[in-house]
Length: 124
Length: 275
Image (cartoon, rainbow over all chains, first blue to last red; front, side, top):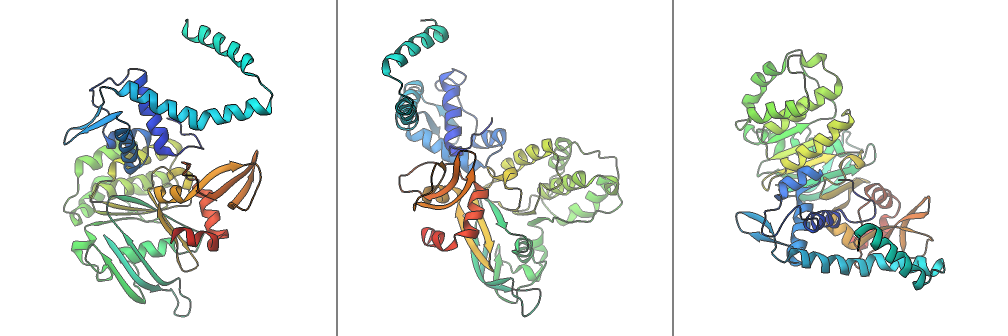
């Protein structure tokens, strides 16, 4: 995994876990890699992974079964979506808005683009 | 694990390297020891390992005074120096001669680490490259299962794949009962591995804080212009890489190089933030 420069590592690891859940690689009630396994795979401090897992627990995305390890929550997908939605609204949308304002891009123009994008990428 | 109290140390009587230095280190952490050339990083590590003695003040490592060099303590310290000498023998002879000092020496783990580092085990130590020797002593040091692991510039001389292997090995070597201290200038090699930063400057500890504390208090980001909120900044392609006080609970990624320069340049602004 390549880490980006601008975001805290523990949040980037959270995104990595969320992505695995959204893509169905890790399913509800399945065990996620242990803190140590994840730290070794990503070459990061285990305490950083622990911080990620604590965050994901508070978002009900994973849960800790004492003595066994961390598991994907049954409602993980819904909870990932609401967590990611909040992040998109708070962090990413302001950047888009700023560029729209600076470059004089109207919502109509974006609407067409959005529709085409969905058609091309998701066949709907 | 380690309690340093009012440590005074100098190689010459009238030239103190540390003045009244105090600090505590605990288990379950990987500490990154940073500082300019000559700031005393290696000297501090040597004080902790009992290789040099303090002029005054106290040093407590796992309940022992390291300057007494008691075997019970030394068996729990693994010290990987920056410069080292290895004898003209093969690895198995080296292990036979040295592993006995460490009651918990883990032979299968040592063999596994050598394989991971791709070490030609049949070759004499003295005929190996610097990087290969370094990997042998890192493997030996970790296999001692010592509770205190001290490494002085461990990634110097390691090739690119070995650095990634080293990070994986260190990530798995950190346990709740172990304390790992790594001194380095190669911050990019290790910045995701250390959880607490110790920076030495001007005879004392200029900063000791966990990555979490640092990023709670400071924000590292690109800015277009410098205003009075910026504590320290360096010009970059698109504006400036800046350190700001983190007033809005922003989550940013710690930039160790930028922090290092900020501590050197703006001590007075940073000090009140961390006290």
